[in-house]
Image 1: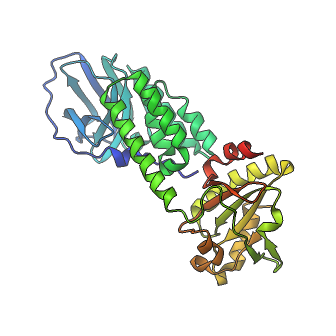
Image 2: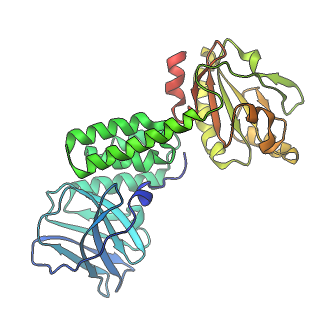
Image 3: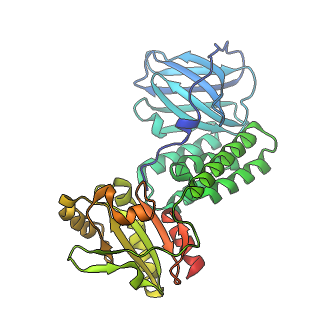
Length: 353
């Protein structure tokens, strides 16, 4: 999978006006941030609908110490802390009195910090820190990280953060997290805003599916092209097997990052009638790079073809391919059973094996 990139950076921009806090209560966020001497610190409560509620602000002293006090207990929710040009998100459960963080200004956005005074904050920080450190290689690893969330609000935010770059492939995850959040915080702004966001994603997916040239249930058009050795290979020759038709290219970064998962599934199910038919959109002068990529990525199946016409690829036009990776899962009868199942390949495969 791609390097972790939080969807919240897009759905929660800074819009609020910041108010000063007089600091007369025992509820506070304080910290010591190395390298943050004399920088301004701003605390806001963040929401899914792009609105933020100002909590307070302070200035770090010469040692990077700061404290923002609140007149009332912190509400359960998502918060954004801005220190100079750096931002970090965290969650509170509403039971906190004083939360203390220690870290370095250069790494706080990756949650490399010590947290005390909030189990919820510490739980979220550890999940994000591990995600940056380990990098998800498969959807299953991302889902496992989501399941470490300490409450439904945290899990909903993690679904957006870890799976949001390809939300169309993870609609079931978004819908189930929305239902869980609504049961956990019924009628809350977080639950209603998240449900609205999920509904918007569903509408976009429906519109995209309606515009697909090839639809589920249709026979897969045949493809006959030469492989790297010049031998012509045909998609129709694989009828009777379950086939992943995979449009990719050696120059396509997302394709190359997704290949290990395809290889894993191929080895796991090849003896049960699963195969892969790979169509490369490499250029005429890119044949060598295509062959090298096949070897480097361990794409050991025989069915590799290309007309080396880049975006003018004939089969890509037939299948309405406007971006890669683009995949189609084909059943034993030669009909399309799923479109773009790359991130849910194993689940879709198990339905038809």
